[in-house]
Image (cartoon, rainbow, N blue to C red; front, top):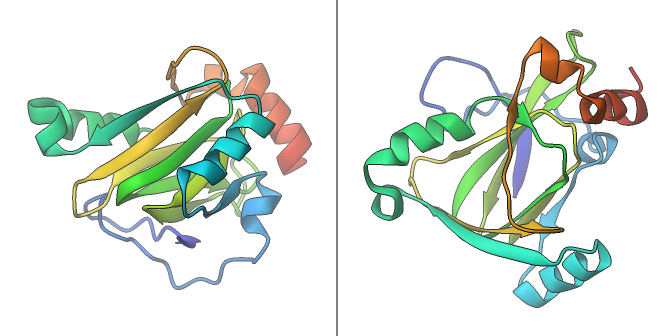
Length: 178
C-alpha cells in the first residue's frame, strides 16, 4: 500500500498521478480512515466480526469480467461520491486506487489523497467521506466488499444536495472539524 497526494494533472485516471508533495504521517487517521495490509482473510474476518459486518461479496473489475461495460463502470466508480455507510474493501487480487478528499470543504487544503492498493490491502472509509475508485493501468482488481446488512452499493455523487446530507455534515463536523 502506498499513500500520496494525487497530482491532479491531465492524463488517464489509471496512471499513478503521484505528487511530490509530502504527506503528513497522520493524514489517514486524521480522516478517520483505517488502512493496512492483512495477509489473509482470517484477519479480515476478525475485523468484520468486531465491526458487526454480516455479509460480503466479491467483485472483479476488469475487461474480461465485465465485458463492454468495463470502461463506463470504471468512469462511474471514479465520479466523486460518498456513502451513508462505512465502506470496507479488501483486495484479493490485482491492484487499483482509492482516492479520498482531505481538508476542509472548499478550503486551500482540500486535496485528493491516493491510496494505491494491491492484494492483501484493506481500507475502511467512514460514512460521509468523498472518495472515488479506479483500477490502475493493469485494468484488473478483485475485491471483497463487506456489508453490515444485505449487500448494497449506493453512491451519492457530489452535489450541493449531497453536501447537505446528514452523513456528510456529521463527517465534516466530527472528523474535519470544519
